[in-house]
Length: 427
Image 1 (cartoon, helix red, strand yellow):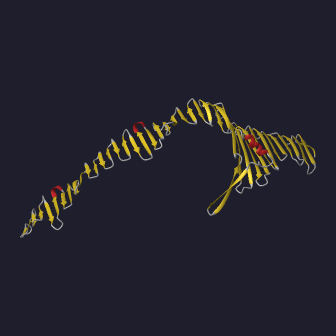
Image 2 (image 1 turned 180 degrees about the vertical axis):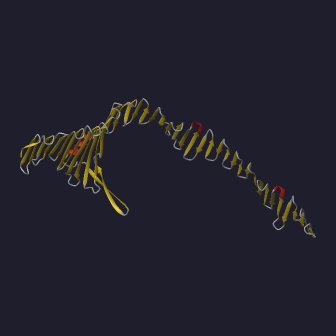
Image 3 (image 1 turned 90 degrees about the vertical axis):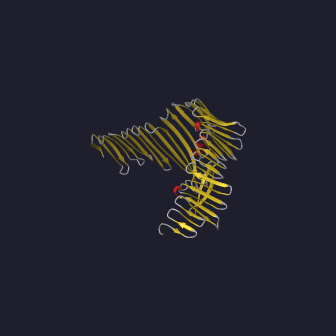
């Protein structure tokens, strides 16, 4: 009688209850089935959203739509209750505690596995080659190697100690108090670095590097001198290239092309002197450097020096000397210099000298007094009243307030012109 019931010899079906032979049973509260071919059983409790299966080897159980459950195969069992825990043969996990075959932890207290242990107060990482120990509250750690060497750091590295395998201290420090190792000891009041410098308070000290000597008394003065400077000057002044200087050729290839360059060997390619006064209000530097052209045909030496400061007084000089690398003969010797006071306003001078060219210029108060000499030709101006010109071809001119007085001689025309009080008196 549809839809109320159906019944035959092996089954009875209604909207709320039913069975089909002995292997199937249905109701609103319980459902069960049995498969005789696979010997598998199934059950379900619909109001609880729960079900389960089982056969000869495996079985499963799910509750509350799978939030809780158990399953197994032989002696291996897995169970869980979300979000409280999960457990199987290799692990047991909860929101705060967990354990596996190789690790365990308890949040936030610790974590431990085969290679490390981590907690709020202690960290330990051990391995075949090194071990590391950390104390997080102190921002400190220790790292030791299999050879016995240790590195200890305190307060995020502000303090530290390094030791060797014999437990001897290699170096130690406590910033900003001191630093100490085999070659140096540096502190707020005293410091010594082997082959570098020594000081008594940072205000006074001496420099003792190889080839370098110097010292300082802050804020009054300081200097460094190079004992190779005299030899470098002698090489510049020599008519031929020093026999100790050699060139080494280098060849490389990039972008499908071969490139070559040469470097200096046998002599020091760079030497320098420097000094300062009144904490940098006046400085002095000088360098002599050597380099070769890429093709190795020319060797060039550059001598550069400067003195003073940018605003009050400056003096710069440069000298460039070139030698033929094959014949060793000097090819050219050029000099340039410039100096000035208060941005070149009160005093300004220039000097240029090379083969066939010599130029000098001097001025006071910009153009109040101005002097120039180019290859023997001289010009002197004193603003606004005096001018003097003299050239190597014999030309000369002297004038005062234009033609208040003028005496000019032109050798090309072999004529002299003289004016007095703006009146021509000689032609």
